Amino acid sequence: MVALVIALALLFDFTNGFHDTANAMATPIATGALKPRVAVAIAAVLNLVGAFLSTEVANTISGGLIREGDGGVKITPVMIFAGLIGAILWNLVTWLLGLPSSSSHALFGGLIGAAIVGAGFGAIDLSVLLSKIVFPAVLAPITAGLVAFLATRIAYAITKKKQRSRFKIGQIFTSSLVSLAHGTNDAQKTMGVITLTLIAAGFQDTGSSPELWVIVVCALAIALGTYTGGWRIIRTLGKGLTEIEPAQGFAAEAATTATILASTHLGFALSTTQVASGSVIGTGIGRKGASVRWRTAGRIAIGWLITIPAAGLVGALASWVALAGPGGIIADAVVATAVIVTIFVFSRRNRVDAASMAVANDPAALVRPKRSKSKARANR
Amino acid sequence: MIDWLAFLSVLVASVIGACGVVFLFSVGLRFVGSDSRRVRPFGVVSFVLCGLLILYGLYLIIPAFHR
Image (cartoon, rainbow over all chains, first blue to last red; front, side):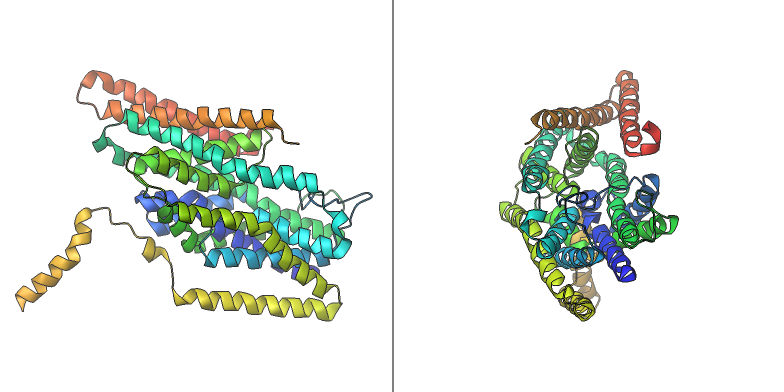
C-alpha cells in the first residue's frame, strides 16, 4: 500500500511538472525568446535545482483544509491514495482540454473528496476552504492582471518600437525566476505527501524531515514532467488568450514573479497557475491593439471553479471503492490506469508538441514555402 | 476571514516589484539604444539596477539566504 501511494505521488508530481511548465515558459516560447525545447529544458533544470533548494515540507498535506491531528480526522494512506487518484485524473483531463489549472487545488480536491467519504462532511473546514482557496482564486488573477497591465503600459510608454524586440533577452531571466520559484514550492507538496505517508505507516518518526531518496525522486519526477512539457497548456497560455509581443511577455513574467514572491513572503498564498494566467490577460489588455479572447479566459475560469469539486468527486469515488478492502484498492488502481491510458490514446488524435509551438521570428519564413513552390514549378 | 491587509501589501509589493523591473529594463533599452552617446551610460546603470532587483528576487526564492 505504501509503495502504491509513493508511486502515485510521483505520478502526481510528474503531472504537476508538465501542467505547470506553461506558467513560466508559455510567454517566452510564444514570443520566440526561447526555442520550445530549450525553454522546457531550462524549466526542467531549474525545477530540479529548486526542489533541492528548499525541503521545508508542510506539516499538513491539506494545508488545514481537512481537520487533521488531535480531535480531528486521521488521514490514512487509503485516503491519500484515493485523493492522489482524483488529483492525477483531473490534472490529465485539464491537460487534455489545454486548461491551466492549479495542481495544488486538484490535490486538495482529491483529498477532500476522499476525506468526506472516509470521515464525513465534518472533516472539512469550510472557512479554510473559502479563505484559502475560493477568495484567493478570485483575487490572484485580478491582482496579477492589474500588475501586468501597469507593467505593460510602462514598457510601451518608455521604449520605442524598434527597441522592443530586445525584451526577449530580459524574458529569459524573468521566466527562469518563475521556474525556480515553482521548483522550490511544488516539489515540496509531493515530498510532504510521501513523508507523511511514511510517517503514517510507521517507517519514519513523526516530525522528521524527508529522507534524501524522497527528495531526489521527487525532484526527478517534477523535472521529468516539466521537460515533457504540457504543450496543450503552453499553447493556451501562450497563444490562446492573446497575441504576445516580447515587451508584453517580459511585463507578464515580471508581474508573475513579483506577485508570487510577494504572496509567499507576505503571507497571502496565491496559486502560481492563476497568477500566470492573470498576468497574460492583464498584458493583453495593456497593449493597444491587442485583444483578449474572453471565451478562452472564461473556459479557464470554469476549469478553476470545478477543479476542487471534480477532483473531489473522483477522490470520493476512489475512496469509496478502496474502503471495500484490498480488492477495492486493486480495482481503483486498474480503473485509474485504464483511464490514464485512454486519455493518452485520446490525446494522440490531435497531437500538440514542441513543433506546433515553433515561432516564425522572421516574417519571410511565413512566405517562403509558397515561393519555393512557385520556384519549383518554374524550374520544371 | 480574509486578511485584507496582507492582500493589500501583496498587491502593493507586486506593483512596485514588477513595475520597477519593467521600468528599469525599458529605460535601459531606451537609453542604450539612443542615438545620443551621452545618455548611454544611464542605460547601463538602469540595466544594472534591474539586474539587482532580479538578484533580490533570487534571494527571496532561495530559503538558505534568508534563514
